[in-house]
Length: 282
Image 1 (cartoon, rainbow, N blue to C red):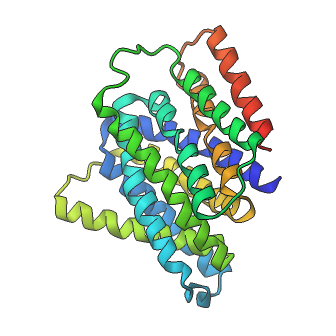
Image 2 (image 1 turned 90 degrees about the vertical axis):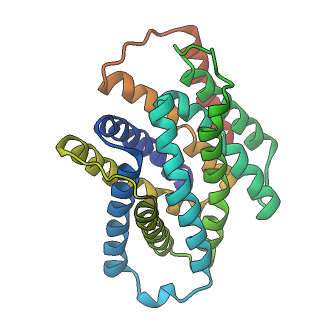
Image 3 (image 1 turned 135 degrees about the vertical axis):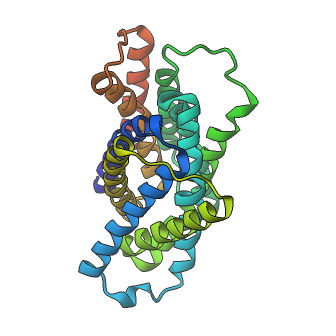
């Protein structure tokens, strides 16, 4: 049950992170948010490494897997996610990105030979349907299949595939902190190189600094929960539970951002689907 609890906690922290990121982006840009977030995460994990991890733990073939994970997740997918969130809004983008559950689950079955039982399969589908129905609450469906949806769809793909090298790396070292340190450091280096080569403008004022700082803290703690969840459980169980984060996001938007939403039949059905899907997976 520890892996399941960590996965759900990761979802909640992601939701809190989304709120901070969305507010901070009002007066900043995606590359600044990505750099600031990953920098905080890298410092956080290097401190943990210095305090708790023997340095010889980094002498492992797992490093290459975590470097790949950092490139796919912390560099590519994170930027795509923030761009998707800024363009479509937190709830709508979360709907599409939650489909990474299917990418990770089936990749784990094909590559890692994990077991996909009927209950896990049905639970995964129910969670995706539930968060999709809930996240679409109140949105105009016009243009839903717009070609620009390539952003959140690409985010879902890279996040989904990223779970594989991360899981393999953690399995080799049996030390999630090592993996997280290498991944965040890799992402930070790539972001700095990208910022330099693209000549993108780094934008940060007092307001965005505050939101980005809190976002970075939530990101770091969520990352820690994430890698330990991968260490303790199978991807076909952990990834679907982490993908309920749109449910938490919408609840936080309602309570913390003052969004007015009615309790509709669609909302009730969505909640039932998500809860039922989680129960089936556990």
